[in-house]
Amino acid sequence: MAPQIATVELTFSPLPVHVRTARLVATAVARRGGVEEALLDEVRLAVGEACSRAVEVHQQQCPAEPVRVELRDGADRFEVMVSDRVPNDDPAGEAATEVSPDLAELNGDLNLGFAVIAGLADDVDIASTPAGVEITMSWPVKKD
Amino acid sequence: MDLKVSDYTTDDDLTVINVEGEIDVYTAPKLREKLIDLVNKGKYHLLVDMEKVEFLDSTGLGVLVGGLKRVRAHDGSLELVCTQERILKIFRITGLTKVFGIFDSVDDAREHRKKQK
Image (cartoon, rainbow over all chains, first blue to last red; front, side):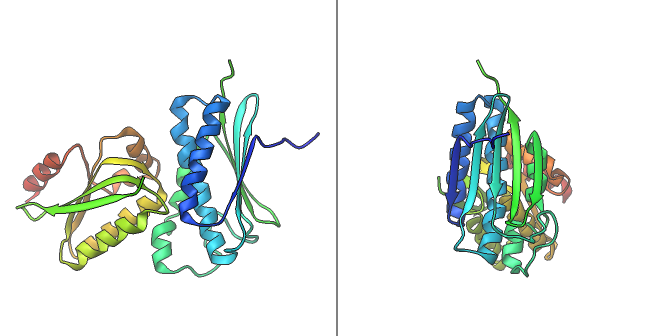
């Protein structure tokens, strides 16, 4: 079976300011793909959370590598995959390297990001691959 | 939209922080600095008015929890004004509705505070 081709692919330098851009793009593609208006806030927030996490781990370990977002507009589901390039990172556990207290306070000493993603995305899969961590989320679409 | 943060202190020694815009990984440090600055100035009873907040993510939640820890170290309080369902939903998902006092208005929060005294 041929791999599913992303409708939109986005790569960005791991800077917090670009997370907002990723949120805006994801929301626009989701709207166009038929995700109900009531779910768009959830898409926006969940994609932002996944991108924020990826930016955080890239800044710690590989600041020159871009974060990758793939948006797939399928027949039944709108799917988003956010990939980082930090292998051996335990996505739902402790950070792989020591984090400054400031960063920990800002970004997740409570691991709130994963709680938000799990609470918002209709379907979530977190995979740790040799290349890095992939967070895949999807929502239903309505096609006319 | 950038984050706008301003504050004033009421005659009952409550410092109200008005927040306007999006609180995310990019803008949250600004709110964090404001909370730290207020605590350093001896303001230990804080009320964050979130009625004009358009977006809040877990980074923003982390900053609010950090602020709460700081004021509690001085027997203080950090409470919120929020009626927007899409913002309240994030507090519910993370269980933080049990951690923060959340009020419909600044007046409601002040009234509650008077009754507590």
